[in-house]
Image 1 (cartoon, one colour):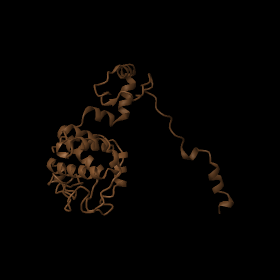
Image 2 (cartoon, helix red, strand yellow):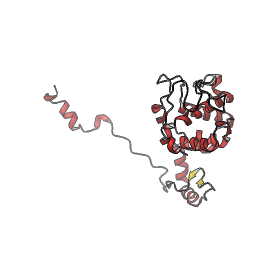
Image 3 (spheres, rainbow, N blue to C red):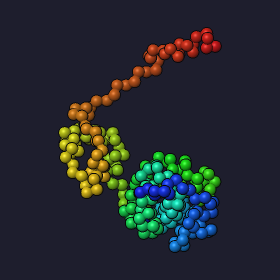
Image 4 (tube, one colour):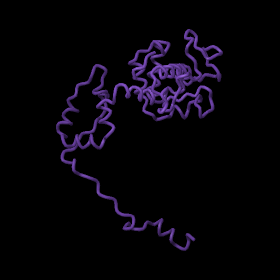
Length: 237
């Protein structure tokens, strides 16, 4: 598997029941037909970006392969972010992780938005003192960091990372921005600039670029609240 960057029917929510190996595997944690896949941490495990190992593509590929195989065997996280249905559908279609395309792996990584719900529910984390030491959110973050280091940050991501600047630009050219949003043609996959065509996008208002919210009233000039008057009464002492 190289690094450039569905849901499983009746198998949803099924957990591996062994601590050293999982169902459909041997006792040493190896997957049948794929002797190099282990569920125990590989020598590529790293969560510290200050370590040189963290940025090695080969090390990252080992951890992606191990983690994807482990998640595929459990499938408890099918109901969380879209990364898991995408991963499970690819596993059902292709089988081993080694046969997945780079586009599929990139999509799995991109669809993780770091909510970390999978980590709080996962029974194989280091927090749970499990030897598998799985941390799916950190692994996705590592994969994105390695890709950004080699490919750079796309303009789209840089713009969306600064909504204040994007709002100022859009308000200044509101008519043009609204026209471009309304007239954009969807791509064959049903998206426009990687945004679903059914997504309701906000429109930029004309002439509001110079408006700023009114400053909040200083605490010393505010009227005392009922709670404050009650706290200063003899009953409070």
